[in-house]
Structure formats: C-alpha cells, structure tokens
Length: 292
Image 1 (cartoon, rainbow, N blue to C red):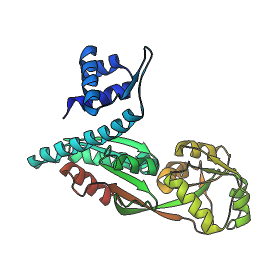
Image 2 (cartoon, rainbow, N blue to C red):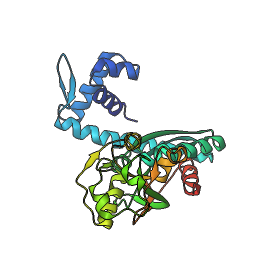
Image 3 (cartoon, one colour):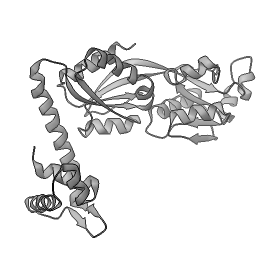
Image 4 (cartoon, one colour):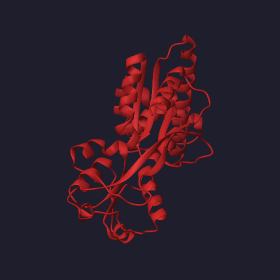
C-alpha cells in the first residue's frame, strides 16, 4: 500500500502532524516529508497549515475522499488473497441500522464468534442512509438497512420482515380505550419520530400515508432508546420495531395500540457493493439469513 496515502489520511483525520506521526510511529519531520512529496506528486497543495491547525483545502477534500476508497479497496483485495487459506477468518466491517444493529446483531455476532473465533468483526451503527453511504464508499463490507431501500449501485437483498407497533405508556389517555383507536385520535396525538434518513422514520411516514393522517404534534429524536423512555414518560406515542420493545412490553412499561394497518410490516435488507465476498463475510451473511 502506498505509504503516502496512509500518511496523508492520518494527517487529514488528526489535523495535526505530531498526532499523525505518533499514530504512525514515525517522526514529525518524516511525516512532513511524505506530505510534501505527495503534494508534489499530485501537483497542488492539499493542506492549509498554520501554527494552530492543519486543514484540508478543496483539492485536499477530493484527494482524501478517493484515498479512503483506495485504502478500502486495497484492504478488500488483501482479504481475498488471505481467503486462499480456505478458513473463515480475518476482519469484516459491518454497518447496521439502529434497530437491527442494537437489538438483533449482537446475538448474531455472538453465535458467529462461538463457531468461528478467527473472524474479527467491527461494527458501526447509524441510520439506513448513513450505512448505505459507508458501503458505497468502501468503508464497510456489508450493511443491514431497514425499509424499502433502493440504490442502483448496491446489491440489495431483502432477507427478513420486521413487525412494527404503535406504542404508548399504560398511563396514556389512548391506553384507556376499549376499542380500536379512531383516525382522528391518532392525528391529534403527539408523536415521537426518528430523524430523516432513518428506516423507522420512513416506516412512520408510510404509516401516516396509509392511514390518511398528518399529525401536527411531532417531536424528532435521534435515538430509539430515547424514544422508548419518552413514550414511557407519557410524552407521546411512536411506531417502533417488535425487536426494540420486547423487554418493555414484557415488563408492562409500554403497551401497543390497536389500530388499522398495525402491525406495520417492513423489510430488513442486506446491502453490499461487490459481488465477491470473503469466506468470513459469507459466513456472517449465512448467519444473518438464518436468523428468523
């Protein structure tokens, strides 16, 4: 791997020559020489320097983006070469949406490591759009996303269904209803929703369209756990996955609401960029598909 790219990426991310040198186990003058040589090779300055900071300029941002992709591709190539040993081993980088990543993925990884201890997973959690972008940028080997995600550049495989329920506190006024809730009551209720780009937010908006409602009282939170705590505290109602609410339902801290179109069914999908997988990644994907 070209050492100039590695040094450049380290300086760009640390925004400091000394910290980059420390991370790379090099001297600061050596790091400076690599950067100067790399800028001569590219034909322009890539970093703005001062006594207080080191920052990417416009050209540097372009080079940094492609350098990260090149590094990701090189790492993948090396894994395929290592795969010639016919062992399910080595690193795999996994991205997952919040619901799957926080409530389902840990159990899959535990089973995988029990059977294949030579596999070394790393995990990043984000909303579905963020995870797909990481896979597109060669920074993740695989992503698990929610909903009807589409992108012509990615291989997308729906592998399971997720049942979603409207939840509320047992003390919420709607919890006292003895019959199915009316659309007008749902529209007037305070809703707690995830941020845009989240698969759960997409599912909530689809549910609103199916029910023909447009609630005015909406609070946007970026965490499923925060939404559960807020619903339990009586701040409003929400739509969440069965996986996210199992414990709270069993303890009586939350309860589901009987309404049309509920449970709402959405998909979990695997997203990859390359049609070629290492044995470690294929092993992980087999376990994901079997987790039903």
